[in-house]
Image (cartoon, rainbow, N blue to C red; front, top):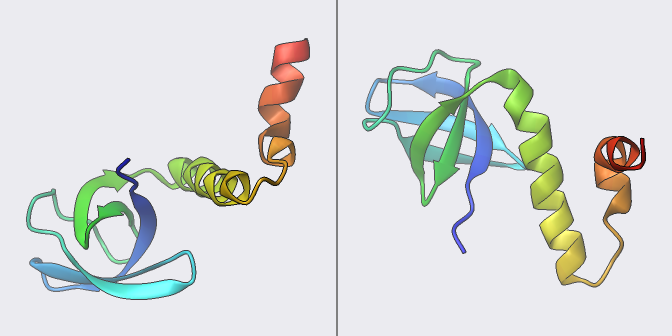
Length: 90
């Protein structure tokens, strides 16, 4: 399974960007995507920006990643998707 991590661009030189997300910072290759301004978001896989993200995409992606980590430990993940659970019962 391949996972991407949403990360915020802290600074960029057009070739790489220093990005932060999910409690870590790393240098990311941004040469394969359109230019993302400082403060913008990118989806990162294997230290490469795969695509720019809209700000509203970040929280659902982080919730999904949290759910994967909790499910792997056998913990309940329903609270991470309460909004979806409400829609399903309506």
